[in-house]
Image 1 (cartoon, rainbow, N blue to C red):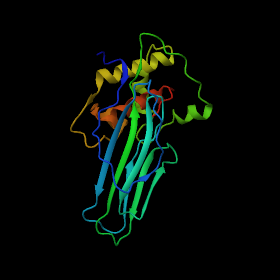
Image 2 (cartoon, helix red, strand yellow):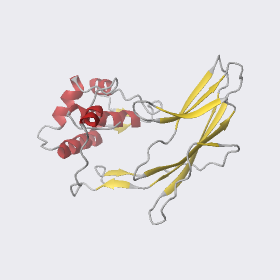
Image 3 (cartoon, rainbow, N blue to C red):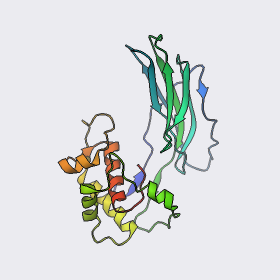
Image 4 (spheres, helix red, strand yellow):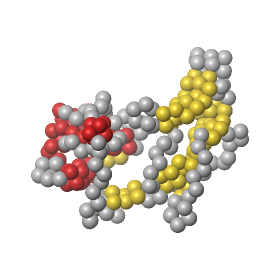
Length: 231
């Protein structure tokens, strides 16, 4: 397979048994039988062994509905008197928020998520159809600098070097993608998903990491040359 093909496939995840006394956040999505959707179930269980004071837990939930991912439901069980689905006010990321009082000595919560995915690919041997134009506000939002994804300094310089000679946004996006493929790698020793500190990655020359690092590096480089990109 050509690594430069923008191919995104759903990873196989373990199926989970149904949970008793579940609280549901979404209703079921009626999958169309003519579309090759795959349904997955994921269970995340958290137990706080030695709680000190009040305990709070935030667990990510699938929160994107698109042409290649559908949220079916999120449900939870446990002994938290307060538990609800909450969303980040800026980016819209969904999470289960659970809270226990200081009197609870064994906080437990179990999150059950169901979602469907299907393969999504872009054929770069043929130019994609023109995308919808973003509003000025959307364009500014998806090109702005963030704490871990600055768009000046070494990030700007690197992005300009990568896209030198590229005439169109399409050519710039492809050049950055090819640079990412050729220069970065997945480092299994990286803790968690990585932190996405792209300035440090470029300054140190350590271009290994995990999803939060490599994805953020592409997004930051794209934004540095004016390409709207979503982390």
